[in-house]
Length: 250
Image (cartoon, rainbow, N blue to C red; front, top):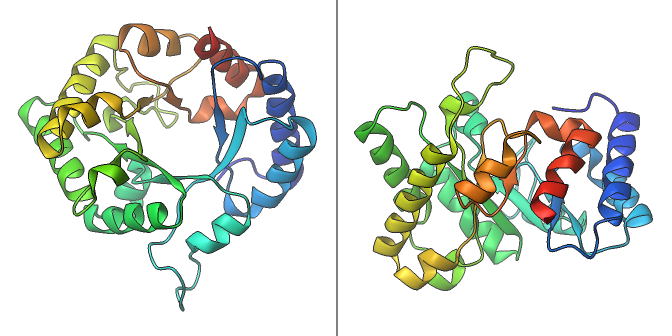
């Protein structure tokens, strides 16, 4: 639920777009996922400044029904009409605070793919406790991808987002190391290979979400071999966010 005002959202979108414009020839793509109320103003600002395929717009969530009387929800057709190309599905905060289940997440993945919106599918263990963590990840993947064909799974961007490594303003939280993340990346690929096949597992992108910033993102990309980052609080600081983009663009 940030930033607080439309003016702040417009300025943030403008600052990020101007920074991305300088990197438009680099091998990097940026997706900005503002709150629903800012989608139109952010889209307009990005189109006005960047005019480049290097930056796209996503949504923070989407309901799994295509239409109907679901007060307060957003449909896939509404998102498509607003210029949305990506949607975050299964974020840990929605799982934890709003009771979103693996079954609901599975329905959202099916609906997003049907409407040609790229799902950014977040998975991650709540605690760092060995076998329990592994089983949690396995269940989230197997239940979340239920009845999805391999051709559909190839359209998904996976996010490894360990809940125990998300600060949320808590300075006592534990940070994930590149080795932690690399180990889980390998495990996720193994599960996908078992569910589908090795070729698919090797080809799908996995990005890292978990209190990433300009000082630690390079370790997750280079050492943990992640394909990108799902950025939280650092995305509200245009200068910090653009530093992260520069690291990924190297």
